[in-house]
Image (cartoon, rainbow, N blue to C red):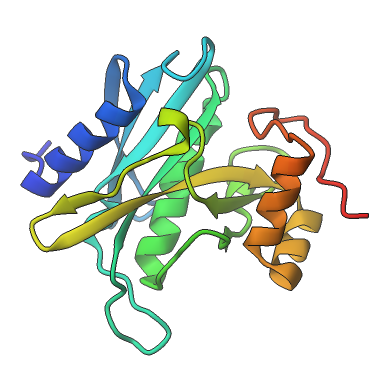
Length: 197
């Protein structure tokens, strides 16, 4: 394994300061072994039985806005999941590869479609929704300034197709409000969809 770049080391250190706990870092490759991303995982740092997952290296890719200009912030992904749900690491890595390949800016309220199809048979929640991180550090995942770059994190949660349709129509803010109002436990892989009426 090659020596990690200074930026990757800074991202890992920053992520660990937010996650806390004992870390494990593993490299994931896309199917063609062209792209790679490292994932930092800590166990029991949020609640007992919950793991925290953070990407390392996605922020080395510059993303473009709708006008083709470089987006003002770089991104990394994070997720919280129950420790036995081993498919979550693959899902976060796949979401990172999706972003790397498209090179289009992502922000809170965006959806990465059909990520769980490759890891679960007929998943009830096939998509990843990107939102402002709220699990760690009293819902504050601080921005990392590295040299002339700003790096921010987006949290991945699993969502239903009906929720994806709602987000497409009404936006992420409206969906976030419903998650909060209905006190949805996004760590529950068997949760019911948000109620829209």
